[in-house]
Length: 287
View (tube, rainbow, N blue to C red):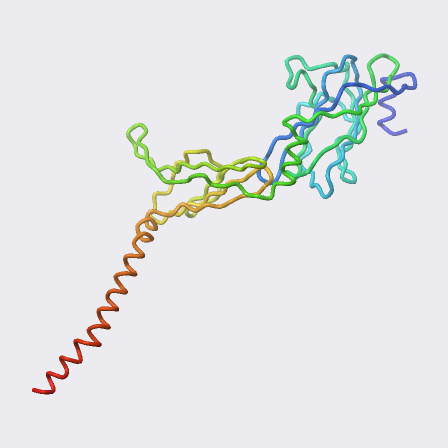
């Protein structure tokens, strides 16, 4: 007999009957970076104590599911550790003593089940869920509902349609003098009208991209320190902006004047060769 069946029989002595519950699963989404997000599955407080829960969630096609964790879960014994099968996450477990709510817990006393990481544009929906009540009869209660925290459904629709990168409103070098020490900084601001700006990365000369908030303190004081910035939205789109190095700020504005000077010299040389030198040569011949 499978382990899962044995454990359920230990808790319940009668054949369970099916009911329906208003207790929904809660799905919380938090961005990890521009490409992934963390999904946490919760169970909302229940009027009746239950000590076994099972479920199946399906994700959008081709979703890459990673880092499944059960830290701080209300489930103490897993009869089916959360696992991926055919683009679904399947789980079941036992809560010794039963569960109704978490005292002083998050989301109104909801109980955390597990979490995982997935592509930022993936959606999650419930296929099947059930509770077994802690009533001595093993009453089976079907779960049909889910609620999305952080407006997950709306966010997913927006992100799926968002193919436009953020726009840079401003980004410029400046200086300030905190505690008597001068620091070079970059003040920046970006905007995304669809899914919103998620974060900004900054890379200095010879360095790597690092997330930053404004103002960004410049650490490389080289005259050749050209800075690259990327603004990401919640759909994973990004736009790039370059802050010129100090030497570029000197040379680039001077280029038109240098070109103009070269053209003037060429024009002057042409005039000398065309009009002045022939006259000098003719005079020397007459002598």
